[in-house]
Amino acid sequence: MIPAEIIEQAKNQIEESSQKKDTDYFCITRDIFQARLDSFIFKSQKYIESALIGEIGNNTFDHNWKFSENKMRGAYLNLSFQEKYVVLADFGRGIKESLSSVIKLSSDLEAIKTGFTKQISGRLPEQRGNGLKFVAETVKSKKWKLYFQTGNGYCSIEDGNISFSQADDYYTGCLAILDFSEELS
Image 1 (spheres, helix red, strand yellow):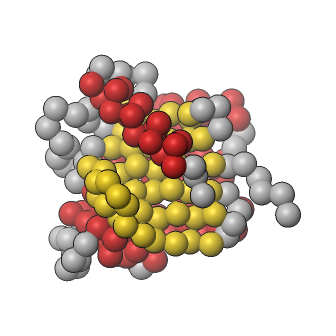
Image 2 (image 1 turned 45 degrees about the vertical axis):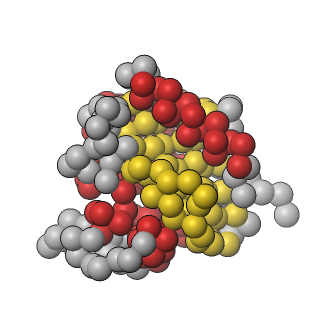
């Protein structure tokens, strides 16, 4: 699993960057996000990793029409957090509120399970909703690691297994931490 101290450090850095209005990490618009992702692809040649980063980051712009007051708008993107992790986040409405327009959900935990396991989109009438499933299946098959939190629900993927649980804290919006290190068998 992504270590708890890394998750906490990431949350602190995102909050600090938001307070400082740090545009080195926050992509206010989709075109800024895409330009940074394109630069990453060009420099690293990591196409599959880039597809996952793009899928998660684009959700910020596809599903958020409002962001938490006094927080940075757009997607937080740190491609080299602690020289090992990719961190994406936003202070948007989160998965539960996004999916609530098409399905009744009782909790953030139910919402994150739905987002990662069912074909459903919060954008009616589109028949989409495969993005987070693509992320999960790719992370599992590559034996990479993912921590994804929305509200107080989180998803963890490691060693090819996915699990869902309730976090001790609440995250407004979405937070994703990816570790693309190859697992040695």
